Length: 365
Length: 127
Image (cartoon, rainbow over all chains, first blue to last red):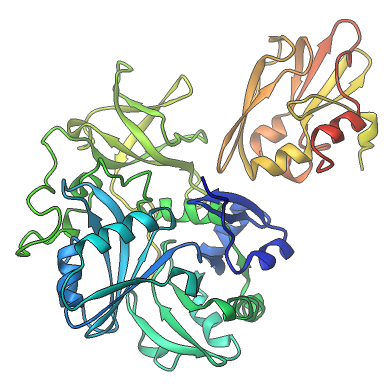
């Protein structure tokens, strides 16, 4: 096991008093002051996240689109320049190697952002699948990624000195625009992992610290706070977004996690084709809500009325926004419909839970 | 401000304040910081008999679950209803409003517990 790595913003986090945690081989800020305060700030105003641990791959060449159509579950060749799309890297057997966001930079150029912990697996899959007039380069170490998330994110981006995104007025959700920060190029994507409006700013490593400082200072009047991975996790859970290693894994097929729509089976050929349909009795992902304050957490059993296990929680927390426990869990298909009673086994106590449609939280437009 | 040198401690990061044969128990600021925001506390009922070093409750934060160990053997005489209603008191005032329970003990109430210097040594000076 290699030593955990730090992002280019380590000194900023330390100066802000962050606590660190190991995540996907990286020492990342888990919180600066309070998980709950950082969570609420993102819902009510804005939060600033360092997500430089995430991996970036650049795909170039005339057959870039064709390569991604083969290497990923979706039809990325149909993605318009300037847009972004959520997709999956599947294994031959239809299991999930990673979930990614793909940005089309040009007709013959794409950016793929994958999870930090899956960087090597994605690199290996791409290397094995690439051929012809397409090349893949792991550019993760060249860039930092800073996310500004929350209802006031756009105001903050506008107020940040030296950050210029000329097409910001027309920048929609799941799209990107190019910009500059001083001399440095910035790719500003209107994407995120919090369930709020916001931006992910990709910038060369050398300029990351200055951009972080500038956004944080410009955001102060808008009640922007630095936010850690703890808040990021409860935010994405409320938004019903899957986390690899929890809701997604090599042993899971996309449809089990509610991601059947991501797979374009009509494509002529792609890795995993014909193997993506789960068995009829395969467990499926559901959202669960409960009353009180005790949360079902990852690994806890979900049981029927007799106490017999029928599933397992993959992520769970006392929802900071909603005030009651929420969880995502894989359960037997018969229990996913919601007409049979379910219980969370919280360290020996059976807590009644109700199946609910995801997401738990949806922002008001 | 509480005089932290007047308290006794356990290796499980509880603090103990003795007043006659009744001790007040809470968790230290070090433990509260490690847990993160406390959102739920589960305390033993008044009247329950506790045995030192055995689990007697739970403290849940947004990210994790911590077990509460009885620092002493005795009988629960009071629990802090305010902290049950507002668990954030554990983070905000771990040594004051965030106290958890009071236990009546027989014999020396702080026998076998750590003093402040020993507790600080245990936490590597972070406490």
